[in-house]
Length: 198
Image 1 (cartoon, one colour):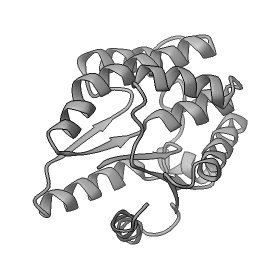
Image 2 (cartoon, helix red, strand yellow; image 1 turned 45 degrees about the vertical axis):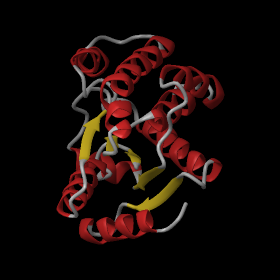
Image 3 (spheres, one colour; image 1 turned 60 degrees about the horizontal axis):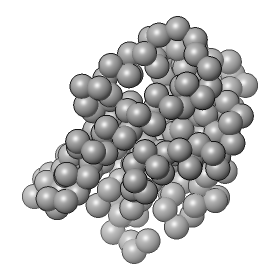
């Protein structure tokens, strides 16, 4: 399986990646957990540019995310899937669709086209979008720590709207998760959803 987790910073996706990874490993499965941007030497350098660097144009930002993603798929995701491992990714293509496509105003279709080329069409089998009120997510995340987290409340609301629109647009792949629920309850819901046919 290839599984991704999406949501605003502070929504709890990183926690759910860890909980699901541990649970699947306890079941004897080979699990590769990774994150975006990052997960490779190039990806980590790009992460520094994107999150700690100076301001940049929306398309430059989008292209950098896609470049890091292409490297992650080539070096980590596809080889793991080919050997039969489960891959769990903290953010993937849907983040670019929500952040750059919707919130930056570039459009979902052009950003999707760029990313599908970068990952050679590889999309997750299942994507969990943890939905949480943007102001609550910001409080949980502890405020604006990096370049993107320092964006305006309006930007965060647009990202949230983007994730909700994507869940409606791709219901066969994306599962909406109420991130206000307790983390263990969320973990049980996610595990149950993975056992259901898509």
